[in-house]
Image 1 (cartoon, rainbow, N blue to C red):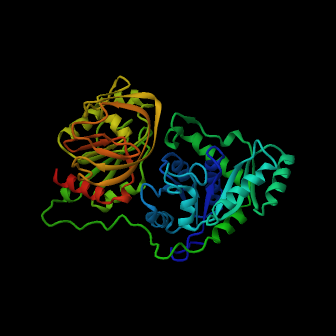
Image 2: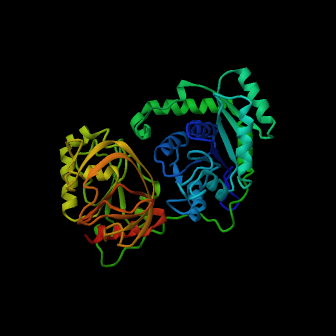
Image 3: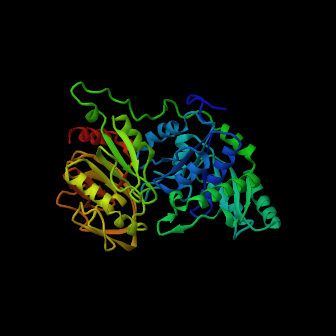
Length: 463
């Protein structure tokens, strides 16, 4: 059932009235159930979240990809979707927060509703029915009528208590004229553990995550009308005219004056359980710019990959693994030596913490003259930023949008040459640019500004 981009990939958006309604369970379960039927399923997540796509990847066997109209701009949502869905039979898009919730103070920007409209995709509304019966009709009616451009094609009732409760709910939703496409009871086997920043990533949860995803798939297969859901997805029709798959760009040909080593610099990318936050497009952009991308695990590897010319350390949970990271003295020394040599290093959030002198009193790499600690305060939200200092990642004046998501504090918060000047929602400088290092709390999506990857790889060639 593979379709071409021109005909439109069958697709659904799984949304909810609010967070906590069960979107991730239903979306991941539907992905697993459809994959279990032999379909090639393309998994997507609205917004900047890194954790849910890990569960999606486990369910489908494909890379989970984000669709964020704030980070990348509305114009890239369709192309990035088609890039991820290439060669697939069907795509499932998990929403973020409530259906109509987006970037604060920006109207519908970055909301699930906006992405559904950009993709011309029907929406399935997941409703937590645990504390209501007939009132569900008013709730569904409100969401259906709020924006006539958003097509709500059906409802899945979640956390239903009994057969009698189900009957009351079905009768109420029928009065609105929206089909009930599934009814799910409470099930402990599909619950996933959480902590200070949300769900525990798949890489940390191990085989238990595999079991949970399998349980989600079984629950959705048993409680939902899969044929009706596939039929709704097929009714999505073509994407808006002119949409073509995003591409990271052609791999550059070797310059005649470069050596083989310099023309294909090796870029080490941190992975493993401590550094799970990364968008797949970043590695694709680095490779398209001519780099050899090699993943390493700071919890296990005692030194950087041989021949490393540049280093990318994304986000994750180093605070959870501070003892293990600190104990790996060989790698900490290897990272410090690379940074001190002037080689390009790009570090986001968790990567910033790892480069500090210490984290919660435990020695880290010591690349930056700063200390990090856990905090009670959650820092969360989109940011409009401009590069303050020239770095291996961005030239001064480069505008990018990003996202902060952490419960840690770095002191001082900025170096003598800050990485970013925040333009919104508050004006401040943040991060560090030292030698080849660009370190910051700000998560960015490089597809919005592919030049940062090309610049980084070029610096790897010449450093």
